[in-house]
Length: 319
Length: 266
Image (tube, each protein chain N blue to C red):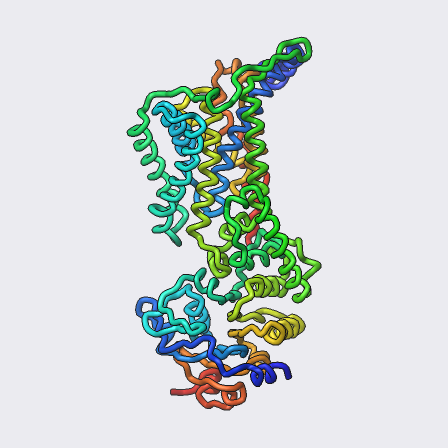
């Protein structure tokens, strides 16, 4: 017993003290994963806020965006044009989802809409495989102007290496989040989005059209998905397995709250960093590979203490 | 008495005409063959006991419900089937019986949503909140500040409305409806659940809106004192049917109305 506790809570600190450069490297890896988790979670939050729907298809939208980019490039379209076309595809997807799925389900229970997104998820998997094929592909990182080298520098007597793609992922994620925050808080359309989230009827009575808002919000989620797909695709490769990674957004959302943009960011970073630290320092105790389930475990523990999430609204029942 | 003056001032022009409207939900008839009109510049009250179909009537006027029979003519244009946002485009705005504000947003933002239809810059500019979008935002902000001054709610500009007491929420909701500069303002029980002082404030605002902006108002209200003081003409519904229509005095002395309110042995 004592040995286990020692392994869990004492040894890691001895290791950190012994090799601080490794600690910094692990922190950085966690930070980068965290920003990408935050981006994925942001896609969920956008749609959930505006329509109360948990969009199960968000993960596949990440894959679909990345596949479209790679696929268009492979078909001979110049990289810059492919990128623009992909933005168009995400808009088309948003428009199609509103037209075909959401419009017919207005005023239905959220669970019905949720099931519709499960259907959408499997449709996109099949449709994507049909068009682009199922085999993993390589992201066209350098062609769309993303750096590929690495920065190496000395930290506390060791060598820490930051991949340039990771640095740009963090920067781009930051810019995207800042842009969305301004969009949602300071503009008419952003206000309309929040209005729809609060009260459909009142929103309609001031002249807001739900259909238009839904297209915009799914488009925004699509852009977030495309960005995530490109960044994540550049770090590993572009395959349907990415949509499993996207489910890491679940613990992020539990931590951050389903309706909070800052929650998605902070939750993403907590999950990213803690899973990498846990993998590196606790993994060997149980033979490794705890990275894939540790975030869910952490989220479950967290649920005991704050079921509404870090930034979620506390639900007060009026009796 | 300002309300009387408005009646005299108002040209005898019909703003909204409801003709033979029938609305049913399944087997239940909420409104049965009701006709009445609202003249430009007047304050028109719709009263009746609970379940008389008053709110349904407002919902028909602003396009939430679609009547099975009947015609509605607004500003000379007749329509049969219409969506709420089209009603808003044509100049009808409203408040709700149970306050329907955007609870997470501040007073200022709530009232700004009322400007939705007056703002025209496209999504592209909004993405960056740059150029035309920013200029437009500031212009409309100025207008909204004037409404805030008018309703005397400066002190709660930045407060999320979910935290405000009920009386103030009703006032913010009125502000949101006014922000659209409507031709016809529908108020669904604007004084429900208010204490005497709040009622007096709200009455004053309703009269001022009518007076200063010339806005035509249709309101549903249960407080008979308020109705008789405020309105130029009153239409009375009971069990979905119109049982009386006229000036407050005429309605007050109408035997059908007295029976409907007091109950009578059939």
